[in-house]
Amino acid sequence: MPVTSAPAPARSALDRTRPVWRDRAVMANLVAQILIVVTGGAVRLTASGLGCSSWPSCTPGHFTPTLHGATSYHAFIEFGNRTITGLLVVVAVAVVVLAGFDRSRSTGYRVLAWVPLAGVLVQAVVGGMAVRYQLPPAVVGGHMIISMVLVAVSAWLWVRSKEGDRDVRWLATTTTRVLTAALFVAGAVVVVLGVVTTGAGPHSGDSHVGYRFAVDPVAMARVHAAAVWVFVAVLALTIYQLQRQARRATAEPADGVAAAPDAVLHAGYRVLGVTLAQAAIGYLQVATGLPIALVNLHMLGAALLVTVLTLFAGRLRTRLPEAAPPVAADALPSTTTA
Image (cartoon, rainbow, N blue to C red):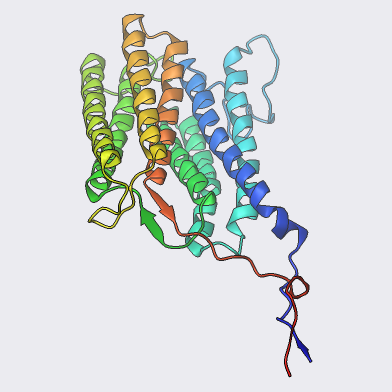
């Protein structure tokens, strides 16, 4: 009599289309996290942090800015940033639905998918504190740093979405991995010092108090620049190490990692390109008297640097291929037994 395999469990329409929509939601989340850095920077650079005098409403009794004789553009800039935050919440919820509840993925991946939503909610509270307590510099600076962390998490979520959950196979040597870890530490220092430098300068976010951090802005700019060049030096060493690995024979190296493909080296060059562009913008904005447009472009560049650095780290490894999906019984040839 014919013997066939057990039928594969039926997959719902959501399960079949989930990977496509999940990837779209994860990418939209990454873009929105970068966009909120730009709009938040516009709020700070135009001193619009108190454009809305209340939170979560813009003015007492009104969710949106009210038009009257004393209405300024500050209210609309601040409200626009809050609107982008609302959009970010919608996208983060979509990520949770499509990735956070994806039972085909690992627990770690599903937990990671919840972080953007949790981070947006934390940011809403921090933003409310900044408004209610008249823009304390530590809270305003922390607001920016949390955004950078969420950009990094969102970029890593994109990396994890494009790969499976099987064992990791490294494409970089131990030395390269150590250098990359040092690169992340140096990058974090650069971002934090950048936030302090902005808070110490004329674009601190408050039109009444121009220098909200009680430090010398020129000295902070020099310390920030020094940290950037340390970052560049570590990055150059990392790329040099990758080039050495690329010149090796295609045979398996002694430490058990595969030969790094060109994509890994190209990812390193992208980090270098964004870094050098950031350095150029930084020096140009100082030479031209810190125009708002250049300072905001510098903030965008910082978010892009965090993104490409995280994606570079993701390129240093790959994962074993996923197991083949189950095949329906009627797709298999039947066999007979005597």
